[in-house]
Image (cartoon, rainbow, N blue to C red; front, top):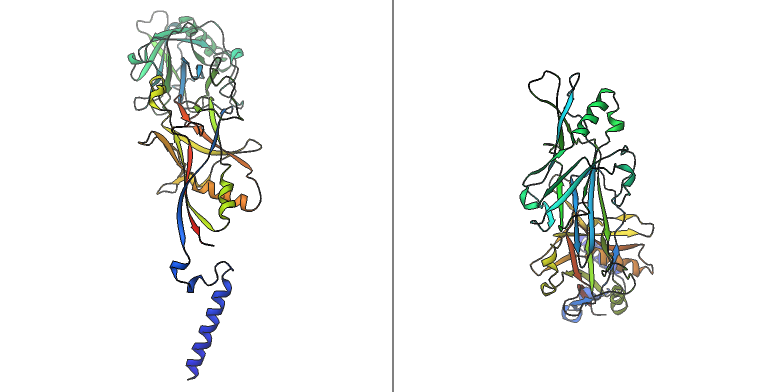
Length: 433
């Protein structure tokens, strides 16, 4: 009998403790029939605001991909890209005494597995090669919009005309023999690193083409190199010394945009336009705002739970023919920026593989001709902040993929687009009060 009484007392204590832990709104839920305490699943569309902004200045040294060319576009204006490279005597070969330069043959590699050009593959591109005359210091921060004028001699030592369709895995350029003579002389008096500072590759202003070439440096094969061929008096055969871009040699990507006469010339960051624009190579980014997220709180308070929030980012309709002019970028990223300009990478967008390696998740084009981004974590974070009576200390942005060397561009329907706007679709549980 004693044991029975003890069991009853313990049960009463446990039940009292259980109901004491529930808040007032939850109290009694466990004993009310489910039909009397309902939760309804609601799917709703929340308005978004989207503004095109110029992209930030980007550090542009030590990249695997380098671009050179000019593209003229009625939407994005004129874009010109160029790059500079420091070459070293990676073969450690030496010139024989009395060496006389015969020729200099330069090779620039291309990636055969990825996109090698943007624009018109059949048009002729003219590329000029200039000697770099000022040391590109490794400690200096070189950005994509660096003014490079003081770094190179304005007399080219080589040029080449070609169309992207003609080249497969590398572009070969013959440089002036005089440049080889300078190299041999600087090597002899041990001033190579001070006088032979590298080469600068720039499209000719005479270009009538509409092409940007994307060159590729592979450290395993080192297809970025040149040979200085030479002979000595009495030689019957030519000798050579190999110079190449090594992992420790600096290379710099440069790009500049001229938006004159386009919608991007004077971007309105206050009033939304019908389209928003993403462009790589320090072009443009998109700032997002979700002002109506607060309305979810004011309408439901704490009586709802967010299940999912999906941002739909539609590309411009095919009838606008944007895609006939250029290829939309295959991947975009969502990140944040603090009021001080510091970048924020959101935890929910990190992917971790089997080995524990993490990578930031990008969003690709879906079959519905849009980017679809799971914003559940961000919207929940905003709800938590608003619930505390505060405002978020960061802004949310959409960025192009590979912003330094990817020249794909996307025109996106903004929330102001009537037929197919950018929008946030939310799904949540709404509890009966």
